[in-house]
Image (cartoon, rainbow, N blue to C red; front, side):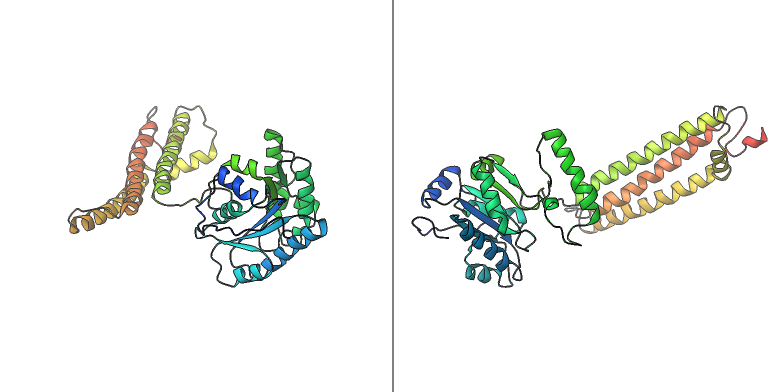
Amino acid sequence: MKCGKERDMMVPPMGTVLTSEGSQAARNEMWHGMEVSVVIPCLNEANSVAHCVDKARKAFEAAGLCGEVVVADNGSTDGSIQIAEEHGARVIRVAERGYGAALRAGIAGSRGPFIIMGDADDSYDFSDVPRFVEMYRQRYDVIMGNRFRGKIKPGAMPWHHKYIGNPGLTALLNLFFHARIGDSHCGMRGFTRAIYNRMDLRSTGMESPHVVLDIHTMIFGVIFTLLGVQILSIGSFAKVFSYSERFDRGNISLKRVLKRVTLESGLLLGGALFTAGFAGCAWVTWRWAAGGFGELHEVRQVLFWAMWLFLGVQVIFASFFLSMLGISRGTYIGDYDLK
């Protein structure tokens, strides 16, 4: 729907470019009477983006709203851009990949004081835009959709999301923050531009930063693996000491284990782990030496093999200590029934 006097506006095709509040205010002045901007992030949604644009534009006309539909395209190659433009949307090309990057660029390039976001896969009914605007006119700053009050088609939401995850997270938000919402993960939301600027959103992905399981995660994994084995060892020490001192002589399962687990078996296991880890570390060291001791690229291999080497050392010394704990009143681990 045309609003006021239309002028040309150049929008940078980069998702990382976000306008300041001052420049945004200047842009809003170009469109007197503009009330709402529907922003739709899109990536290869040629089968559905037209339906989304048409529903939003028809909602504008039916309710007499002055609004625009902005499609923030994230590199579509299936004709989504052309389809959206043909159906009356203004397309902003976003170079930076990511749902969040597309959404931020689309909002930065929009021109209404009230923004409604929704996906381009036709999973949300943009015919409900007037209902969001009505709440905005009642001076609500943020309006959340609620799929549970509408109709969720079979298969549209996994049962554990529908009955456990979403209701549980929504209840926590209402409990601790008094949000008074019914669907915390609904993707159709409305908010004022002033509130959006205060949020200072920075993520380029979906809701939270993308997690990369790389070397730093591996370091934590190695540390917690060694810590877990150490905790289990201490627990075993305490259990065997309690048994050897006759504090807990009725533990049948522990008695069976002590009959089967000997010092030799622990040394064999620890020795095997140590040998495998030592061989792996030696292999990495040999390759590093062959390259003239330059930059070490096999850091992940070092972490992996060093973990098994350390585990082997832990098992060996734990076996010795457990065996010594069994020395009580002339009784050895595995020989308790002899006394």
